[in-house]
Image 1 (spheres, rainbow, N blue to C red):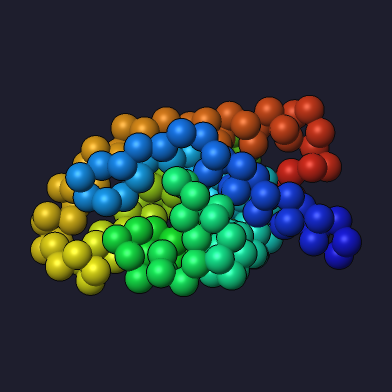
Image 2 (image 1 turned 60 degrees about the vertical axis):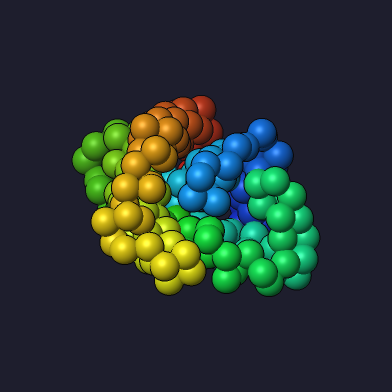
Length: 180
């Protein structure tokens, strides 16, 4: 239990640290940042339940006003802004990524985690992000999906990187990866 709590807190901190990397804002009001890589890693390394809890802990800290999101944003206002769909989707994305990494046995963890990150961290996350943009900005589904098109190449790269990192951690320190 103590180890699980420590890992959840550590990965919540990882998401925060990845927000310090420079990000830039697209015309949609959604920044391109490395934080979604942290979300993917939460699921890939911690598994479905713990990964989602790490993201949830991070979001609670953001809601309390800590400026942990890319660009130093925080507070309750971000949960009703253009990026709100992504924030809600992070929890589900980490869960789906972890579920796939945990349950896809018989393949190398790098492939299972990378595939999980691609499905959870890109497909699922984009569904939430598009829904948020439709509700908050008033875009149609087609407009929201078109606006997200600029993010696809970078997020695919992040999914591959998440798989490679999870696989490398598993080979170097098998006990650290909670999905296996």
